[in-house]
Image 1: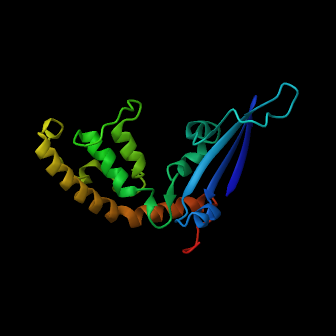
Image 2: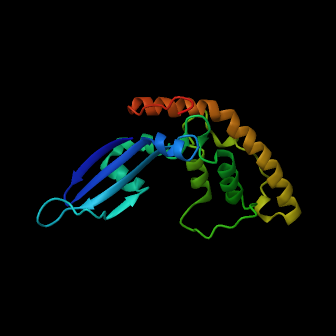
Image 3: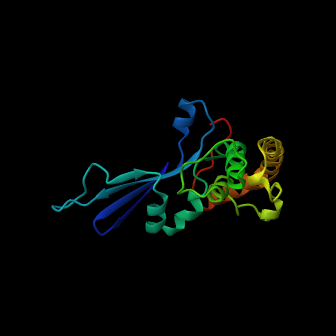
Length: 191
């Protein structure tokens, strides 16, 4: 894991990023890239408080302090072989929710389902990403009867899996290129 420390005014941001191989080994899973931060507030007497002001997946704060990190943040929770965490399932979930055919409801009005879909599939990382490549749904999808929605979900699920898996090799290649450009060591298979 790499760290970058940035100080600005009364705050210090420590960004930790990379592949935590020990965590992956301990939990018998493929390593995932992560980028998180911890913000400490300056003491009036100098130095910084030990307890953080905030921490975790604070990507907005990280980008504000370190704009170059945006190229890394889009890869948060991506793995070198399987890509974004729960890639196909999450893509399908957000795409169905966006089109109003999901059996699941979201009570989070802060999150746009399409924006979450775009983030989930790392939209734009693959050359040629364009909306007309996505699985098609009839214009009346959100107003369809339950039986019709069930059939649409089945078709979208199969189409989404094909779409995700078809672009996965190019997605992994771009992920690898971005990590290499940022100086992040790419884990070897089996680590």
